[in-house]
Image (cartoon, rainbow, N blue to C red; front, side, top):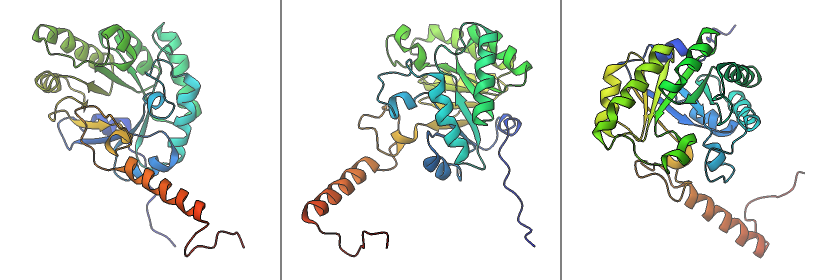
Length: 269
């Protein structure tokens, strides 16, 4: 008789309790196979709307539809057993009203089986975050460089370079924390401001191009694996998968051309 304990997923309260504790590890994933690998190391996996750019060749995240997020969210949930799965709410699925946000967030959670959703925006989204959390939907908030607002921001620009803008970012962070968000992504933010916000609020901060003093870090998996030929400046590239894939494809093409498959029987028999 087996005495092995079943693997239990990390929960939202467990992530929230990591404030000031062991650093929270996170990566993005968009399909089952990579999710299964990341699952062994990450505390939470984000099914980010960055999939529009990474997987589908879009110029920004703005064009990502809700159905696409749900499809990729299902795949990641199916490929994992341990990590908390958080799914991005795409542009246009939550901004109009708290009621609209609830309908779409509920659909994401029911159809994917994820444990939480993420949405962008600070003070302006506090009412929506409170509405969702009071109705049983855990929310990860996201401020600083918010890609869905890149057209308004004039591109992907580091936030907080002008110290006069710091109070507005700090107000955003306090507002989402008080509204009930269980954690907060700080993206593309100058290090001193991100560190300052981390000290000021009671929920964990997750940095991406922000401060090492955040309570956790997240990267886009394809960026850190070397699949993006032009990764953001802040990304440390841990692998060279792009080069490895190109070499493997080149080797395969050469073998096909020469009708040479050494050491392999390429039949089903």
